[in-house]
Length: 390
Ligand code: APR
Ligand code: PHB
Image (tube, rainbow, N blue to C red):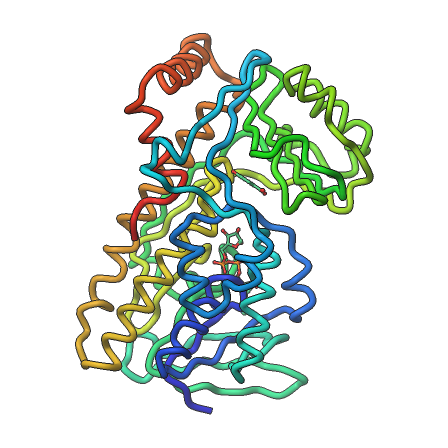
C-alpha cells in the first residue's frame, strides 16, 4: 500500500490530523494498535481550549461538541475553606473554555473518519518505522498473522508517550527533559450531579483535589494521593470521605456521592523531547510531551502540534514549499514549553509536597495571595488556561 502521510496512533492527535488532511485532499493511513472499542473506553480529561474547539469545527467534527458541551467562563480555587473565582472571561479578553469529554471527542473523530472513508487500521501490531531519515520512508505492521508495508512520504508519530515513534529517533539525536512529581491523582467518574457549575481546584493541607464534570449527570473528581497508593486501596466511601475532608464545608455539604463507574490512579510527570522531527518523521501530542493534568493542557498542547503540522503538510503538497515542515519542531516546541510552564506552575502552587520546607509552603501561599490581588497575575493565568494563540 502507498499513502502520502502514515500516522501512527488513532488517539485524538492522530485522528484530528488525519481528518484535517483528508479535508484538504491529502491521503493518510492511521495505524492504531488497539481496537476502536478499547480506544473509546478510555477516560481522559475534559477541558478544551477555545482553539482546540475551533480546530474540531474546522475538521467538521464539532457538531455534537457544540450541542452537548458546556461553556465555562471561569473556575474556582478553594483554599482554607474559601472559594475564590477565577473570571476567565473578564481576564482573557472575553474567552472561555469548552467542557466536553475527550472520550466523546475521540468518538466524534473516529466516526468522522469512518463516515468519510478514512483508512484507520485498528489492531495494527508490531508497527515499525523504516528509513525515516531517507526520502522513501515506510512503515510495517502485522494484523491477523499477516505483515503489511505502507510506503509514504511522511510518518507522523501520534502514538502517545508509550508509543514506538519517539523511540525510533536515534538516542544521539533526542534530547529529553523530564520532571517526576512525588504524588499521583486518584480519579473517580460517577453518575452524579456535579457539585459545582464550574470546576473547583482545591489547595488543602491534606492534599490537592479537583471537582470537574463531563455533563450535568456525570461528575469527575480527583484527590492527590501518594505514589504508593493503588486503586484497590480506595473504597468508594473512603474516596468520598477524603474528598469532603478537602472541600470547603458548604461544598462538601452539597456533594452528591454515588458508585464509582471508573476509578484510576495516574502519576504526574512533565516531559518534553526535542526535536519533534527526525528526517521524514514528525512527532505530535503525547508522543513528544506530557504535562501534569493540573493545568488541563494535555490534549490542548497536542492541538497546536496538529495545527502546525497540518499547515506545513498542506503548504508542502500545495506549493512544494518545505518551510512549514522545516519550522514545525521549533514552532511547536515554543508553544509546548509555555504549556509545560503553566502546568508546572499550577501543580507546584496547588499540591502538598511531602518534603516541602516551610519556605516552599510560604511561596505557595504567596503565589495565591498575588494571584487574587493582581489583575496582571489573574490575566496571566486566564490567557494560559483558555489557551495561548496558535
Ligand atoms: N502502534 C500503534 N498505535 C499505538 C502504538 C503503536 N506502537 N503505541 C500507542 N499507540 C496508540 C495508542 O493506543 C493510542 O490510541 O496511539 C494512541 C495515542 O493516543 P494518546 O495516548 O491519547 O495520545 P494523543 O493522541 O497525543 O492525545 C493526547 O490524549 O492521552 C490523552 O489527555 C491525554 O493529552 C493527552 C491526549
Ligand atoms: C477533567 O475534567 O478530567 C480535568 C479537568 C481539569 C483539569 C484536569 C482534569 O485540570
